[in-house]
Length: 277
View 1: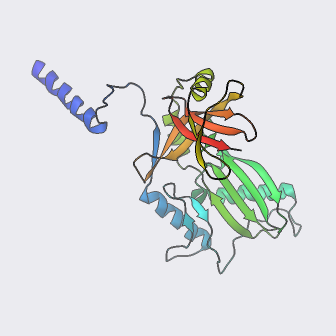
View 2: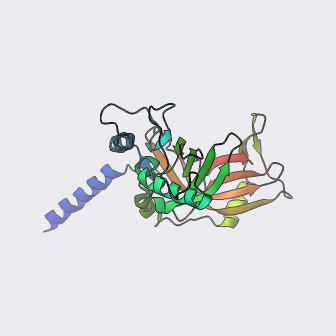
């Protein structure tokens, strides 16, 4: 019995070692961090197939450009023989604003694979009409406990008054439900006060408006405040096929220009240097 127990313990130890290499700092407890999103060939194939279906093309690889890693649509082909249209809502030749929003809702549902987001997780944050006649609808993806930052989680649809789709661009994160399940057990270790103190004590890398690289150190009189906790998405360190999702504090620094700094709320590391607003 003792021999069987020893073998079982040895097998578990070997299995764990294969899953995660030893940490020089010693064993860690808790869920893996940061949460990693990896590129998958199946996701790319699904996006191409979805576009072919919508374009009613049965053969050949479409000319759409996909975002790296996430494989969601980056832009439409520059020219297509048959234009794409938003669904028609209402009886008038030109849809009113309420009808336009319903049309956009139906369009997003039809194109959800290429957009890479559950329509229920998309919130319309901007609807504008440009001087050149192009109408723009901008959405934010909100599937996580904390809002997405880092240039991800945005959908933009450009179209004309007669419903012709002019461009479609998405930086949404697919598989959001699975990722949220991995993010849910993570508990921020830094309070807002901790994050502010860390930023005040650090030399923060900063690229000024003229493009020069420098560092900034906050003065005692300068305003430094924690805005909110966010889900910050960055390319994975040492990998070209993955993204990392971090829980971070968004810290507002100074004014004229106001700057934002992103500090990991779990391990206290600087994720993103100062960004001028």
